[in-house]
Length: 248
Image (cartoon, helix red, strand yellow):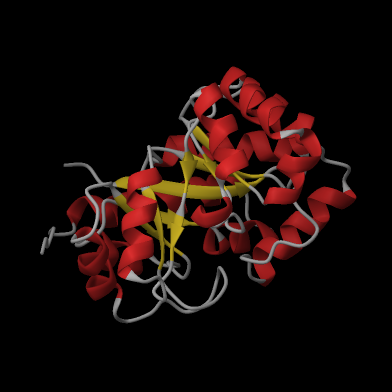
């Protein structure tokens, strides 16, 4: 079965038009879905690279409506939005999820919304039929993982490490994936710390999908072009497709 490749792009970075070019580069490189980051001033789950790109996007004046407009004009691959509770609450949860549905968004990732406090967001999600993608970290208890599995209507985002995006990936990811897989039948996609095709291939042996953000945005931060991004995503795609699956 084809493993999902899910790159991350910050909306409004390097510019609004530049975001469109990066989205297309990801699609052309072989992405299955793409995370579109809605910038927030206090992105607690994000490391320095995504923080920097979010700051630049906010300085450029990007708004929530701009992010939805970007999604409206892009249909090459399914998009998900990754953001935080505050922008959704400011916009209004029902209005936010309804607008996401209108824009064709396939899921909303909210790192700072734990399942125990997700009632308001879940209500809006169910009305709009746009699922919330919950995160599971290595410190989650079995009971909490089962609860997240029961609430999930999409894949589950496995955080590979105890830290923020862009940090070095943990060495025991395979054990983590096996543990979560025993507790839920939802697809499991791994992010945080995957930075090379070799990382992607190793994780793809166990997980159902791979999420890559900081490593991609570093290319742009260093002056790389959309073509450079396309080549990077293509390298990830090849690595994932040639990895040998290992299932517990």
